[in-house]
Image (cartoon, rainbow, N blue to C red; front, side, top):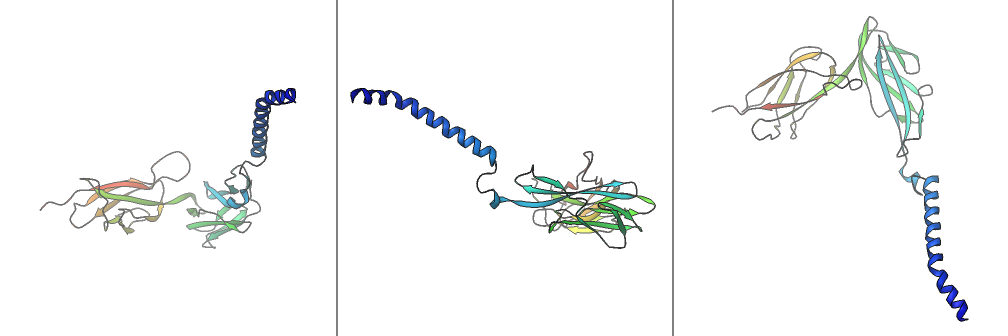
Length: 227
C-alpha cells in the first residue's frame, strides 16, 4: 500500500500537466474547426457589397455576398444578382453589372442577391456621348474660427457648376450635406450665418474610389462679425 501511494504521489504532477496539455490541444483544435465559436450562427449578418466604376460611357459593377464576421466567406454574385437602374429609361444592363446609357441623365444603380439589397447606392452622370462620372456628396463642417465651436443654422450654397443653386443648412453638429455633386468639377460656394462674416470657398469633390483625393467633408471657419 505504501508503495502504491508513493507511486501515485510521484505521478500526480506529471499526470496533471499532461491533462492540462491535452485540454489545451483540444481547445486549439476546436477553435480551428470553428473560428467563430459555438454560437457563430447567432452573429451571421450577410450583406451585399456593390463596387462600381466608370468605363468610358458605361458603368461596370461587381456584387459580392459577404458574411459578417466571417469575412473570408465571400462570393461573387454579379452574374446571379438582379440589376436595376433608376430612372429605368436612363440606361440598360447589357449584361449583369454592365450599365450602358440610353440618354443623358443621372443613374442610380441598385442590385439584389439572395433577398438582400446592396448596402450602398452609387450614382453616376451618364450619357451615350460622354464618359460616365461619379455623383457624390458635399458635406461641409462649419465652426467658429475662435474656439472651434460648431455653428448651427449656417446656410451653405453652391454658386456654380453642376449643382449650382443647391443649398443646405447646418444642424447642431455644424454639418449638412448636398447630394449629387459632380466629382472632378471645381465649384464655388458661400457660407453665411447671421452674426458671422460670410465665407467663400472653392472646392472639388473627388470620386469615392480610386486614388486618394478630396473627400466630401470640408471644414469651414467663420469669424464673428464686428460690432
